[in-house]
Structure formats: C-alpha cells, structure tokens
Length: 312
Image (tube, rainbow, N blue to C red; front, side):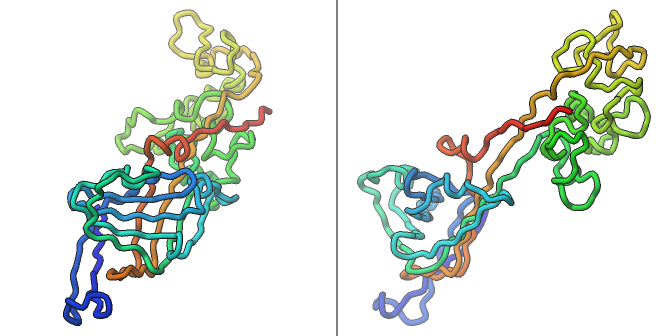
C-alpha cells in the first residue's frame, strides 16, 4: 500500500473558527494503482472504500489514446497545469464511493459529499512507456548479446527483429522458449545458465542454426511436414528424436518462411502531481501511481502485434 500523508492547515482567512497554527492531519491510504474512465475527457481516480475517500485528476483536453501515442523512444511525457478545467480533487463521503461517481456523464444522486477540495494550482505530469517483449523466457537485459547496452543491434538471425523482440532468435524455426533449460534442471530459475546445447559445440541451441551439428540447417530439416516447424519431423520409424536433433538424418528440405512472430506490447502509464495547492490542503508532491488495466482499457494497455521478420 502507498501511504500518503496530507496536512490540512487551518487558514485564518477561510476558517475563522480555527485558531492560528492548528493543523489537522488526514491519512489517505490508497493502493499503488489508479483507474481511468472518460472517452473525450480523461479522468484518473482512486477510491478508498474503507475510509470513503477519493482522489481524482481530470484533464478534459486529453484522451487515453493520446497518452498511448508514444514517440520513437517508446515513451510519452507531458505536463499540465492544474486550475481551470484541469483539476485535482480530494473528496470524503458519508457513503462508500464507487466508480460511477466518476464514469457516468451524470453522477448519481445523493453522493453525500462531506469534504470537497479542488486544486487551485499545481501540475500533473503523465508518463507512458511502451514495453515490448517476445516472452521467449529470456529477460530483455539478457538478450544484449554484444553487451554494449543497446538491445536494438542484437539480431542473431538478421531477420530485422532484434533478439529481445524475436520469438526465434536464431531463425531456425524452433522457438527460443523451446530451446532453453525450461525444466530448471540446475535449480537456479535461470534458463540461460544451463541452456540446451544438443551438438556440444558450445553454442546454445537457441542461438545455433544447426542444433545437431549434421551440416543441415535446423530450419531445413522439413522432411515429413513442410510447415516451417522442424519439431514435428521424424524420419526414423519409432524415433523419439526429431530430425533437427538427429545427426543420423541429413536430408535437406528447405524451409520457405519464418514461423509467425508475435510481439507483446504493454503500456505503463504513471502520473505525478507536484506543487499541489487546494483551499485547505497543501501537498508538495504526490505519486498518483500506475494505471491499472480494466475492462474498458485492457485492449489498449496490453496488445500484441506481428513481427515483420525478413526470410533469408
């Protein structure tokens, strides 16, 4: 849980019943994530049902699609001044708040608002990062083969897709995830400390274009089913070893294409509030958290796209 402490200062000009110097503290317990609604007017909100409190950010000029429109670095960042139509709001209620307090064009009747504080000034900055991964069982940072800190220039099979986005790093039509120590035989939960090396040439299978070392490229051992999948070709009767791992079978049937590549795309959206001023609440900075996927934004925040592999 993220614990945010907001001090409510009794301002003499606004609250004449308070003595100068009185400070009231309200502890707001909200999770690390926030929700979103609004197609033409973006609203971020957080609800604490146990204390009947909400926080919300409203930016009418912005849509969710806008903040997912990342640049060439797969990021988006923009700051908005609070005040006028851009609002940060704190509320407490005499009833349990619900999502429809924010997500209906017409709010429900009888909200039972006890305290309502809207920002006078401040700033909200929204950060978006597009995280792409091939989900091949290898961490992104471990696919920096030349260890120069740049993932984009590591493309073992020269298919135009860097290894960290390539489901088949060596282009042999056997998926990388099927060429690792996925059984965790050494017990360290790291598939790269003991990757499969079928021909013992010190090149792990997931980076080896000829896994059995028989002189025939793995992807060209399509002897039974010409479907660009060497794992289902068994020439020797009753053999439990596919041809691409059987050095006794050296028949060449060239592959015609790479297997389909699918890249997972996840958008991580965060919001940070700074220099916030509300009528009776002062709070310098507030980490609003990370946007959580929900039924109305799941397909936008988490998607897949085909990889554009170039067969060579």
